[in-house]
Image (cartoon, rainbow over all chains, first blue to last red; front, side, top):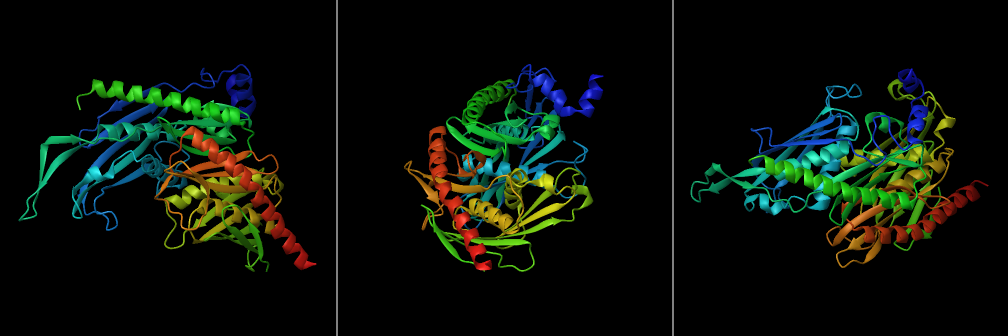
Amino acid sequence: MADAFRCALPKEYYRQFIERDVRPDGRELGEFRPTVLNIGSISTAEGSAIVKLGNTSVICGVKAELAEPKAETPQEGYLVPNVELSALCSSQFRPGPPGEQAQVLSQLMVNIIKNFHSVPLEDLCVVAGKLVWVLYIDLICLDYGGNLIDACVLALTAALKNTALPSISVEEETQKINADITKHNMLQLACTPISASFAIFDNTILLVDPTSEEEALSTGTVTVVTDGEKIFEMDKSGGSQITSEQRQMCFRRAFQRHREGIKLIEDTMSSVDR
Amino acid sequence: MEISDGSCSTASMSCTLGDLSQPDGSASLTHGNTQVAAAVYGPCEVRLSKEFPDRATIEVIHKPKVGLPRCEDKLRETLLRSIFETAALTALHPRSSIQIIIQEIEDQGGLLATSINAACLALLDASISMKFLVAAVTAKVKHDGSVLLLPQEGSTEKDSLGIITFVFREPDKSVVCSFTSVGTLSLQQRNQCLSLCQEACDTVFKFYRECLENKFSKIK
């Protein structure tokens, strides 16, 4: 009976729960789904992480390659983040070239790395003007259970924290590049951005960490990425009546999520060798 | 067809409405040295895969100045779509499409805000019914902590701590959308920007009114 009700009148079904300050999956309105993090699981990549946020799972791998620097920034390496939403993860995605959502997510990853300056690009320089590291950051969604942004940002930050680059020496005369695979230098991140997303239900109620079902019913979304005091926000609340008090609540929750996320990464890092 | 000048505390705005003959509505907006052209088609036929039985589909296409559209244009498109899906009365035109096409002509700061304002003017020119008007204002926080509105003559991204765009709606001036395009801000700086932008959005709404008054006075 409940399933039929949920199928026929999903909004009404949700309202019944939200009236009692609880969601159909048993969470409170301000509660994240259980988050599982695994770091360094891909041995062939320079850095990697798997994030499970409820049903949403995202795997992130960082591959490093040597390349010539861009002419305008001879002393800086560069990063190429890419988010892949394959047909595997949900029926709403079709095989073929990346769809709009994948492109938008990729661009968001670029913006988050750039805006927070989380990777010091000068550290990726091997020989100024000649040789720099390029980090290809591939994020692949394995299961789409909603709130992909938070899962991607957490996977991205954890994988970058796990990234170790082989030490490189260039012979002066022959210009031969020698890589010492036995010696690795950990990539030092300047900061660790963690995000928190909210779906707006019925124009007034904020749901933290929405599932795909909640996303489909929502009238807008708010994403806040934080690191310490610093805030990056993408607010798509549209016509929803979100008060400034509720917005401040979003920021407070995002700061709290940042602390949770950092603790999760640190705990996981300490339990793996590298 | 029309030229009108309004002034904002940042830079002067000017706009021509309906200078393109084929679209149902068009606007070319210049704000400081940033210029954007917007065209609106619709309500017109919609691709079957994008059709909604209860409302119109809003499609936004953002074209860069040179080259093919990139991921950043897609991000702008989704932001614009989220705004106009709620601003336009889409329920009036079920099973149809409203297309908003934005062409960047020059970007000297505050491109996102200018695109949003140009799209809003183009929708007005196309006589698409809307629930409310929106006005976008961009603010920049410099390294020394001072806040100013964009676009501004001689302002570059380099000396900024963060750039944020707020979109407000009429008449209650509540935030419809916000986006940090460059850098990051602290909560205090963000709220400072918000109050400054909220004040400045009045000039944008006033500017809309002037543009339309000009348009209709010419027709008469």
